[in-house]
Length: 88
Image 1 (cartoon, one colour):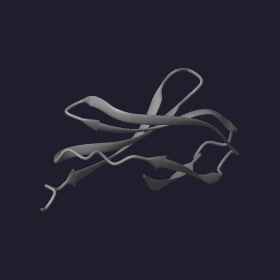
Image 2 (image 1 turned 45 degrees about the horizontal axis):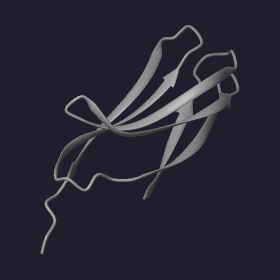
Image 3 (image 1 turned 60 degrees about the vertical axis):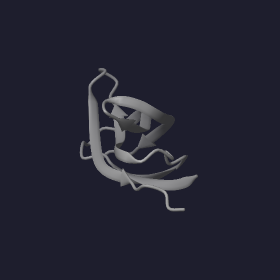
Image 4 (image 1 turned 60 degrees about the horizontal axis):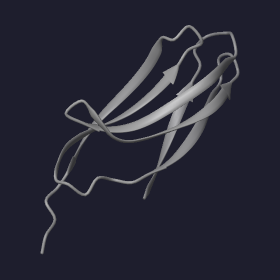
């Protein structure tokens, strides 16, 4: 497993309280995901750590961090990464 530290920034003056989802996807399909609840003061920030298994299969993947607001809208951050072919 690898630990991913997700920096969460609340750029609004009101407190944010809700779930944060971290997922690894390939071709639009979720390979693995975890979620945690968080609380961020208005105009504040925090770091959440997630332990995630990296896929073993070679290919292109996306790491997606997602905050879900109380009204159901989502704020997402996406990062592309590649799992190389295994040697020997």
